Length: 329
Image (cartoon, rainbow, N blue to C red; front, side):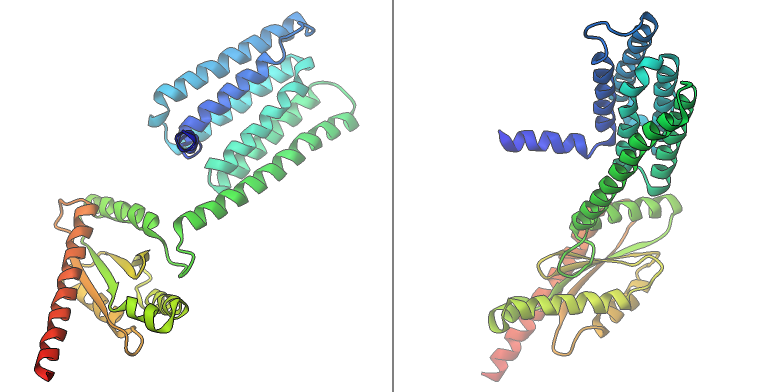
């Protein structure tokens, strides 16, 4: 039960569209918080009701059509949200202090889901909008500055902390902590991207499945630290060996690695494989299986072919060792 709740929460947090619905509903809740007691003026009350209606309508639209919205569309939608909040705050002077927290939410959402440039633009737009709202209130300059600084000092600090946390989580969520190479999740995402690019541009794409031979013996005889050192050494050597134009090396788990070679056909991938083998430390061997995209198969099928080719090489190498052992006996 607890895991189900956690998974549902993660599905919301990791989906910018679902998270946007939550933010819009939170905006509606902020508007509703103004209503109890009816202490506001009639004009402010009407503005609050209009704002609540806008946020609920926006939440409905995001829930129903948000999956069709591009990242740029999401940025434009939140810019429009800044405009709506600012108009409501400017027309209802008694509301601006209550609505100011919504500017912070805009900055936090941007830090969670937008790229750095968009974060700066969204936060800056919110800052300018709130400054205009305060200046329209005809209060003292000192009071306006304190109010602006209170809100946007908080917004900037929160956005910076949130972006730093998100960047760290994304890094460790896509990077193998031992070798520093991309992990399986990054590999699968990149494989889909490169395959789509190859399909769109009608270019070649090859894939190499790599398995370190007798890695278990290294761990058993020399210890796990020696095994970890070997994996790090292989990662460093292959990272320097691959081409900088798009070759992508990842650790897929244990002693398994993979390499994507965009633009490499059947002949060109052989030179890549040769460089991988030449970079191996002395006394270390690897089994490598190669597959070149046939123009129709999925990334999963392409990798399966490379994996099968790798295991065929491993079996052939094992049979060769057995044959030599029998000859020596």
